[in-house]
Image (cartoon, rainbow, N blue to C red; front, side, top):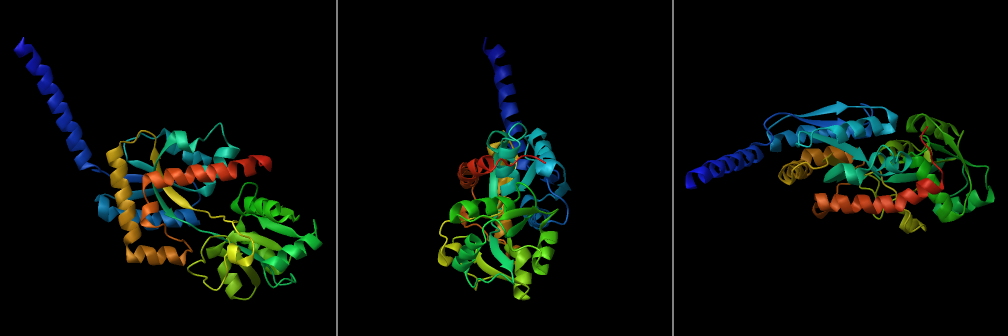
Length: 325
């Protein structure tokens, strides 16, 4: 009887040892970081900076793979279907992992489909207007928009974009009315703002600040609780008279659901090490990224933040009847 029991017990011990060795050796090959948006954009640039820095901690390359299409959903779906072994992660943002799940509820459920790894950066927006708008501060801008109800226009990057949803929330918060003019991206919209064809934009700090510095457009406030590190002279919305109007295109990293917890911890540690690097911090600051504090870099903190953002933005997206193009 004892002889019959010894074999299975030794087998289980051997299997346990194999599992332990596998966990300790992770990763023993390159990791793929899926970027669900186009090469050259802010998310792609951020991914490549982090991937390069994470290699030191992981001892393996992190290979960036751009999988575009469906307003980011194609890459997200590919990440969902990847083997949950820690060798595939996805970097996404407020749009891909909050807004898109309200627009495409049948395709994406970011809470059900992913394990959070770490928040990596916040990129708030600037409220900017063309030089010809007769308003010296945010309160005067709101008054001017009310006086010219329905005649002013805001340039957006399309339905469901940060600029569009920020505009919807701004109208609700201020009782103003203006027209939305969709463009194929922020760059052509900014071109028309500088040229005076549209009056207003809600644009990422890193994108709009050069035009502010060149005195081609006027900035009224940053949509965050604290002033932007690269624009300390521009007040926050709270300081400018619109408290609580906080909008940020934050970025984070996730792994497929059921990725082992130990591997999530190793990935999280690699991200944390990258965000401590002075060179990484300097490069992200140049992009206008506000780095999360250490307590906000945990998987649990990302999960809480994401649920809070979904509770805030889903009703706004659905009330505005924003649909997939």
